[in-house]
Length: 441
Image 1 (cartoon, rainbow, N blue to C red):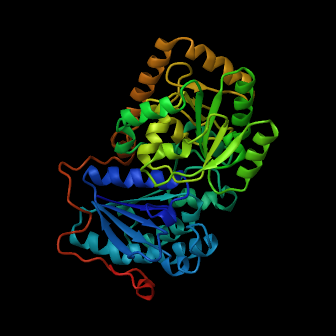
Image 2 (cartoon, rainbow, N blue to C red; image 1 turned 135 degrees about the vertical axis):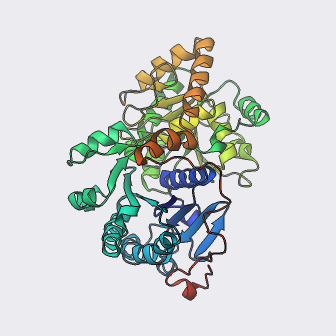
Image 3 (tube, helix red, strand yellow; image 1 turned 45 degrees about the horizontal axis):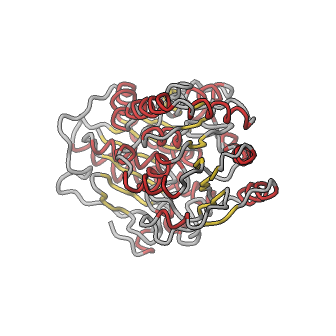
């Protein structure tokens, strides 16, 4: 049984925009670690090889000829890429990958999992191609919704006939029922590195640097649904009460960020932009001379290790949103041993007061009341952090795959891991247009 994941986002910096890249990276790595030949088809960096073996995962970078003309990110030239993804990928996948694989053994099967609305055209074309070639019964097709983006572009009835539709939480399942779709819930997972203990020395160093302050963290896209304005109101209220708050904010490149920071300054908060001196080496360099600062806007990429340090060292992580399909940051906070403050939408893993603080409204007083009670009882705080770590472990990707995904597919785990998804002695075919870019299989 081989797995083929179809996604716009992927592991290249060019293709990493949001949580989708984190999801597919964790999913493909876990599938490969369990012994399944695993392929990731994504819109990758146009300057890298069209096909590449990374560990036990085969990367297939698609639409490179378009990406070469749209170099800012994976979603630059999005509509043209979606059309090319739908038109050229299914014939290549069926004729160059699946058919030869099935001819070798009558027992071979494949699972295709496609992500988000940009891949819907590819799923429909793939379904048609497989039926035309008589191979449809040997391929399980799944299409997954991580968010509601692009729902207005999806022909739901056709998609439901072509594939099993899945989503990441009961909250998303209810939203999709409004469109007549009864999706299967397969939650997101966390990769192994999410459970690596944060560096104790760096955690202690960060705590010393902000001694006497109430350290908050928020890491999300600059989007109204992420409740950034509520974070501003919380910091303002804390400052009025003399709690000496310090908010470390890491947003994206969205223009809404300037609106949020302007609102913070209008409320009398001192805001500074900060960069790390070297990516992933000196996280604390962004916190020089912040004694009179209320909000630090982190402009640099925060690497995985520094992210765990920040999530663990913060007094609270504001991961609450008005609309949150799953709440990956909240789960990452739990895995790092932090205090997650989340919303009440897609965070199925959360139990109020047991493993997280759950905020139901935009009122900053709600957070201040819950957090004040928690910090007044250190034993309860420690118990909440421990419960959060225990919860996160149940959402490790291998556990999600074995407990939820494989039973849904009626698939057993392979008895022994294989070294790679490439049959012994086989070579990788070249993607259409790869020669133009100098990519090699």
